[in-house]
Image (tube, rainbow, N blue to C red):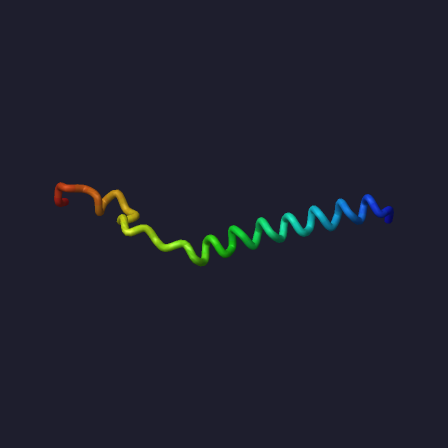
Length: 47
């Protein structure tokens, strides 16, 4: 493998790992919404 191919492979793998790690930790440490998730809970009229 040439040095340019090795450099491109390392840059690609490192960048994908960093992006994946960023979103993984973002999902783990984001606080949940205080709003209800269901539209039924937002209705004012009773059924």
